[in-house]
Image (cartoon, rainbow, N blue to C red; front, side, top):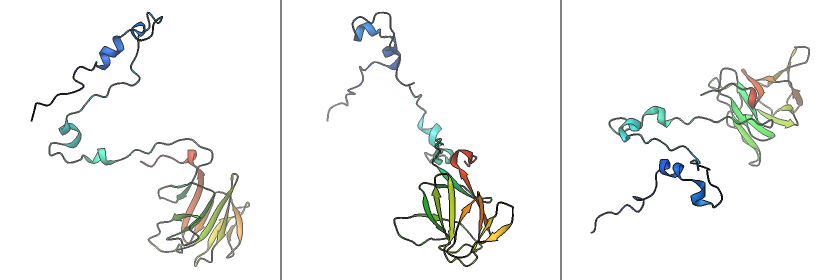
Length: 183
């Protein structure tokens, strides 16, 4: 076998490209300097990124979630839990919800098992949310406009202000842009 030949060995560096004048590429553009489209990335030695053993450093294994503002995105926030992004307008909620596959499912972690497997149906109409109890064991409690707590009768739909209780878990609906980061 022959020696390895690097086909890019003679390619210009970012520094060399940035020093080229536009007139060298486009006639009539004298005096304009071409800047690189992106900043070059400084390469790190393998051992810096992966540790001396080559094992992945834990910080590199974590993906950072990029928040994008959208008026249509909402989150369901369990009390003391991690927000659940609601992508869509209709959801079946429960510990392990069963329903038509065309509907979105939202699984609620409930170690105390007070939330039924298929507990509620939550739907959005414009910026308002409505909830229906799907014959759950422990029901849904909502707050009336005067602050009174109401146990929602089974198969009854009601407008949700922003907070409701499934079993013993308090849940809050929030626009996505109002939910604090949970990194």
